[in-house]
Image (cartoon, rainbow, N blue to C red; front, side):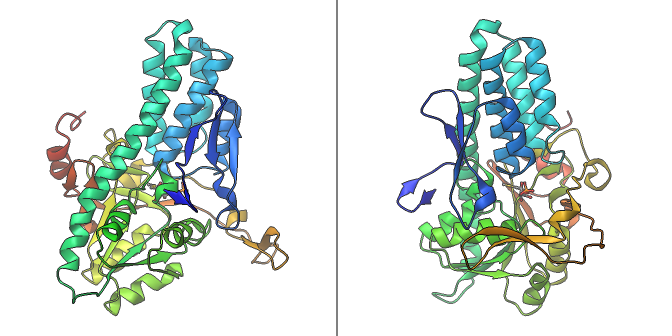
Length: 366
Ligand code: MRU
């Protein structure tokens, strides 16, 4: 997507042909910085410390991490070690395991001397594929927005609430939850996006708001607790979020707070949609609440916020007493029964084992 006049993806091969450039998301919206990853160790730090984040982008970054490993040592043992290092970075997004499995199986089928070129080619293929998946989600989600727009008076916007950042910054390009929004705006359908700030990491305030502002999409930032109130007053027409892992039965794991939005949406008859590419489906898991590992991040993220001071410095300030401990589960699970539809690259699935199996018959039951 565009940053100023230039088109950027979130990750690309450096002009040296070996290292990998990423948008370093830690500094947004205050500063747009690019970082270069030159080793698998650096890649692991970039994923763990959230220089890059969002399930699809985590997967593609890990794929490039495997490619970086082949520069140093393409042996089976080295690939296994790189796999483990990258896999340990973040536990919830299933795209990470999917990308690592894809890369390792592809590379191990080749002799070591062919692995370097093959690794870069495969990582690039996964990146391109991710862009296509997002675009397809966008086209399918656009139809949902269009149907709601048809019920509105001319010029009245479709009011969409989103949580966290499932935007182009969370993927290689376009986003999952945001792709339909970008396409609706391009198609001239008036949309207005309510952006949950998404404490504690503020992905909504820092990243989604930056994306919306950068693309001229009408939007308003709200605190996480405002969504239910707006729904009660008829100010939200639909919710659309992303997901880090969706089970074969349709339970959706996403950023902490998603579940409460889905409960409020159900109580107010607001349709609740999830945008997801199929690599985000974990076919080995059915009961999301019991089976999906939920990342616990440092309490410091809750007891502090980052911002830009009047002097221009980007700094962290503490917001709670020094002696107060904080708990920081980063994701929650929304049960399938609260979800109106799963917007995938193949179409919109009902959030149920049968609904998902109908769209992905070759994967179901595995
Ligand atoms: O902790 P994060 O920022 O990686 O969490 C991101 C989310 O929860 C997104 O909604 C999810 O990964 C889907 S991104 C298309």
